Length: 70
Image (cartoon, rainbow, N blue to C red):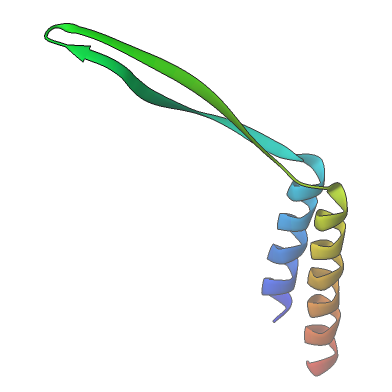
């Protein structure tokens, strides 16, 4: 239980530090014989740093509960 708490705490720390990421998708617009036209579209995924803090609290709680059982 302590190991899982530490892992969840570390994930929460990463979520707090990195508040989002970007990725690109390609969409085919025109495909006529050998001619192809594609469009790149950027997508952004973001979240609040408070989500990471909440995950860290859960991980810390799991660590402390696991420590008391030992």
